[in-house]
Image (cartoon, rainbow, N blue to C red):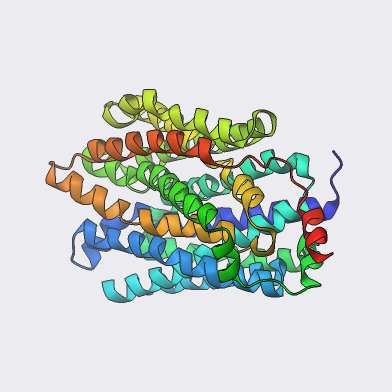
Length: 404
């Protein structure tokens, strides 16, 4: 399997685009407590900013996905990265909670665009046989971003405070220069550019069953990831009263598990198929639950978190390739991102719901997280056999046939 330099550059750019997008998102989950203190409010009120960020992502997936289907993947990706970096920087200047929440909502729009555009550009450019492992690598960008945020929190937070954390978040803007210099346009998009394409609405109407199924599946997937990640640092700080250094180390451990899971199961899906891989990795969460949510020492919690994220991101590692393969060709930059982010919208209540549940049960975050994680692991295992298996389809060829 020989790779061209362009194919490598596209993969690097899409991986970094998603890593830095997630980095900018996760910087916030470490400082909910500090923002609540500064703006004189409660943690659930600030956790609402996570909800609104996630809720606005479908709008970004739609806007940037349409731009990428119309004007190309490459220029859209550059605009998108510049937008989310700038909004992250502005968040650090928030004078009050309202401004903070408005800026996080706008950040959500920018964040929602990157995944669909980056994954379409990559899946259409790389050799079909490499899609499984690259899918795992792309999805590993998300925990890589969380990992970076954990390191920044552990190392810099004591010097720069919560506002400084957001100022650091402008750095991804430099990636635009890399994309501009090294990343070519997708060959499949160049083929599709040559002809008139049906509108998004008529394509979705034509694929209504697929669209509804994909949104329901992605809702379960988003509850799986956000339900096990977003409140984990708060669980460690509030319920176990660990210091920032310990919180940082446990979070780093869980993200290493996530990266390992994504790449391992992404590669495995190339051999045993996308559906079977997702089924197996989702069910690994069940035996791990007690260790992850209910053990007490830092070491056992770290081990539980590591294993839980192997399961969660193992299942997620197959998602970029699976959604791109089952997507209608003419809306590939829009469809995967849109169904993913609509699932995110439906699951965006998670942080507020888990925080409220924990507070009403005497700060029991472990129980709130375990209920969500256990339920959705089973739901994913039940849903995934109904999906289509289209491992290894030729996307450029499919676009050519549509042109012809």
